Image (cartoon, rainbow, N blue to C red; front, top):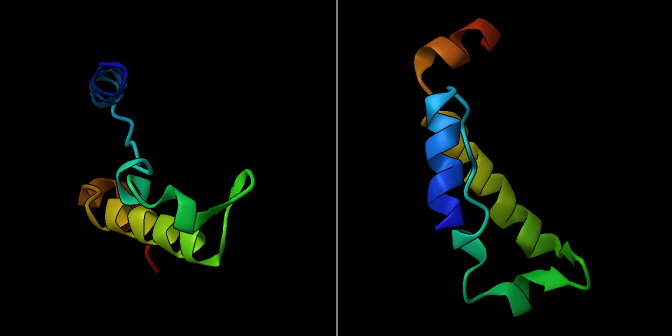
Length: 66
């Protein structure tokens, strides 16, 4: 319920949320050491951010492309 509420509020205000929960779901023990992701976990996070960036509307991305 909270995730849906946060996602709806973000969309209403034009914010983009990166889902970091789903890629770790069921794999936390292999991807996290103590409080931080391990090397493989950081690769998973980077991939999630890359997918989110690639899915962004062009009007958000174009001003930053060179």
